[in-house]
Image (cartoon, rainbow, N blue to C red; front, side, top):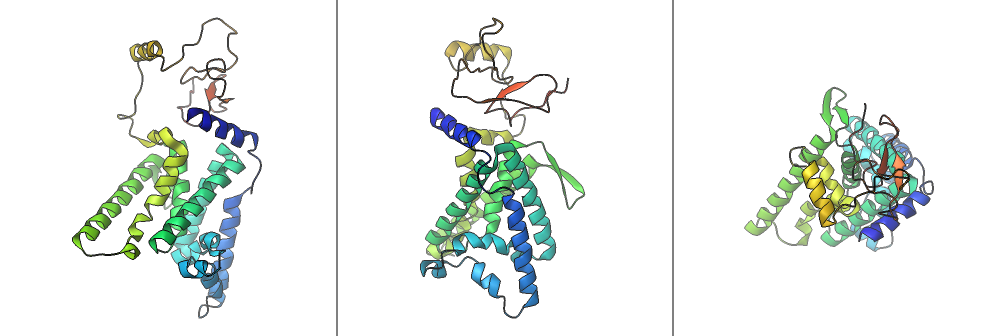
Length: 292
C-alpha cells in the first residue's frame, strides 16, 4: 500500500501542471452567471432546471447533470451566503492547487463529484454541491490545521476547529438518521439521504489516509521523545540515518528518512522554514514551521 501511494504521489508530482488550472475560479464565474440568468427570468428558471441534479432525468439520458449541479450553488444559497461560500471555496481550491499541483486537485474534485453522484443515485436523493465543496474544506483543514480564517470577516477560527464542528454535526445527523430509521419514523431507501453528508468524509479519508490525524487536538497527537524514537529505530519502524556527512543528499527534518532508506519518497524544501530544511512528501505539508 505504501509503495502504491508513493507511485501515485510521484505521478501527480511529475504531472502537476496538467489539468484545468484555476478550476474553482471557473466554477465561481459559472455560478454568478447562472444566478444572474435566473434573476432576469425568476418566473422561468430555465438554466437552474437544466443544471440541477435530477436522478430521473439522468437515467433518461441527461448525463450532464452529473457534473453541472455545482453551478447552481449560488442560486440555492442566495446571493449573500452564496457569494461568501464561493469566495471561501475558491480560496480552498487555490490552496489545494498551489500545494498539490493542478492535476491532483482536479482529481480530488472529480472523485468528490463522482462519489456524490453515485451515492445520490443509489439512495434516490438529490446531490448537492455543498457535499463536494465540503471535501475541499476538509482537505485544506488537514494540510493547514492551524491556519486561521475569519468567520463573517470578524471572528478568527482555526481550520481544525471548524473541521471538528463539521465532523461533529455530520456524526450527529447520521446518528439521528439511524435512530429515526430504527424507530420507524422513516422507511425505505428514499429516506436515506441523511447518508449523503458522509460522502465528503469518505473522499477525505480515502485521499489522506493517516494524515487525517493532522486535525486532532495537540494533546491527542503523538509527539515522540528521544527514548521512544530509539525504541522505534530498534524495532525497525524508523530507519536510522548514518551520521557520516554526505551519506545522504536529502533527509526529512521530521522523520529522518532519506532517499537512501526510502528510494520511492519525494523530498522538497520548505520556503517558510528558517534555514535549509528538507521534508519528505508525507511532511512537506504537515509540519510546524521552524522560525529560528
